[in-house]
Image 1 (cartoon, one colour):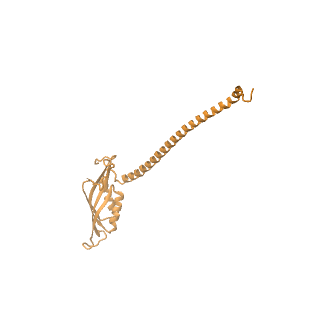
Image 2: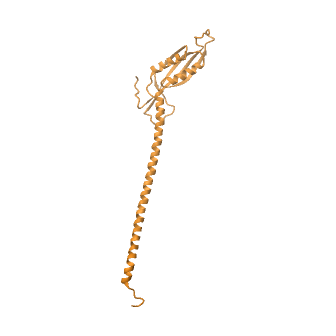
Image 3: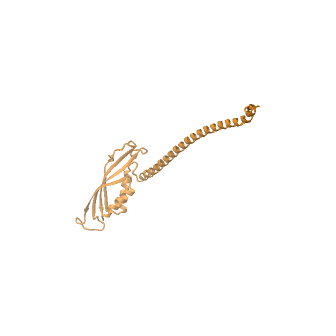
Length: 208
């Protein structure tokens, strides 16, 4: 056997296993890289879905807070009688009891039929679900003092159903035209007011 002769059987016997191991390692590495790529893509998809779900959750929480906030406002206006059918009997009774509690000498009223109020600004949102009504009224009152007028409207707005807007009041001093008496009014007030009520889609607009 010369120095250049190679024992093929010997070489095959001693190199076959390392070569096979190397091939298996390369194949395993390729499979691992492929699986890693798939997993990275799946993770990216899961992360994007998680972010989308989180954004939807944040939007839902924000909308829930808005609903709660406006529901509290709605309930407050509903309790004030601003939302719902106009109750003239309750309004007149409140007018009478307020005048009695302040010991006003006399209070007379005249109220016009209820009309649909013209909104100062048109809105395309919920235009068919909300209708604003207004009743104009005139009040003639005898007052002992100017502050009685402010107290009267404060108590009337707090207790009477609806939202009240005072357009104007004309005061007349009576002390020069009649003798001063403790039980007689010192001032005469003539006021024009508006009583607003709102009918929403969940409230019947029929009169009771």
